[in-house]
Length: 434
Ligand code: 4AD
Ligand code: MG
Image (cartoon, rainbow, N blue to C red):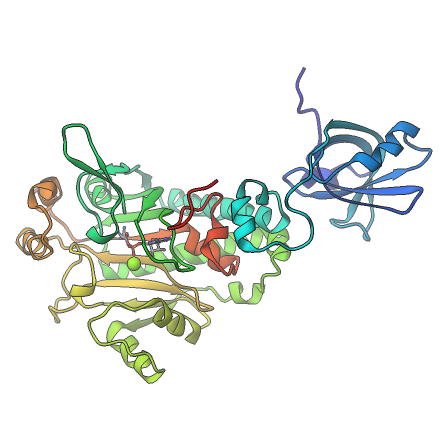
């Protein structure tokens, strides 16, 4: 017999007046003597169950005492609308079956330190905030896929084990690969995306990226999910426009679909409502000038630091593009600026409210000779890029693309203090467990 003959809490509003079965876990409980209140969660919501002496069997009523936090339960009861109940509905219990009485649950309603919670991440996921974040993450990912599907982009998966360095040699995870020498865990799918867009026009990949980041910041993971788009015949400006439309779409989607979750997180929705195209654009030159005025000691030529990004991202209510960085602060594959050869045609998109970079993108260098020169300048092994250079030999065209980190995006949309809560099981410098 099937075990899924029950109602999910998120659907309970459609069953008012009916008798339903709910299966879940005990989130919390309290009693007024002759009435016990059980807060039951099932992954789709939380419902208050009311157990009245005399309505349920004596044995069931008394079982209240042994019901510990996170015990698994099956209950049956009548759905009642009640504005005082959390969620607006409650269940008048007629029957309760204990599946398992949980042992002393390590995460109690009192507050715990983050280190302790991270050590119990496998259980922490059951808490209300974490539940809300993961449900928003789900909507974010779905919205991204929907956006690209509607625009007839083709999803092309990039490999994770790679032979060529995608971004920078300083943050590579390496492994021996049989008799083929070293393999790296992909930092980006971009190089493969470039091949794919020459075959399919507009494409994206969506999967895990790896960076051996030795820094402990609130913005860095060693494993994160990246969505990367690549478009043949798109130039720099077309690329920026696509990025802002994507972001507007995703934020709108979350505002529409994740109302309850954003409420649990106490997110200020007015900030998200402001995410409307067009976004602000400033040049790298301007950014350095503004930063120096604001007291940053950044020198022209250097990449923006985390604090610099925070300053810039606090200046505007909308996301802001910082455009055209110095060549030496960027990866080898970017197209040189047509008028200023020390710059490249690229942009980072900074999220507002101090969150900093969430997208990195550029027009790609489509010229064989100058690309070879850049690969040599960066002391990268030319033969590993032989296939990549082929793309500049056989019908090379202007093309552009970008990569957006899902966790950076979720962290900002949910206004989290740290990126570690935006992914189910974060991987960081000091964290491989659980
Ligand atoms: O700016 P990045 O390094 O760009 C690339 O990898 C390009 N190849 C993308 C492309 O053009 N196809 O990374 C892109 C985005 C960043 O803006 C950020 O959102 C995220 O990936 N990201 C990280 N997220 C979490 N932890 C890290 N260590 C991250 N590094 C990058
Ligand atoms: Mg970047």
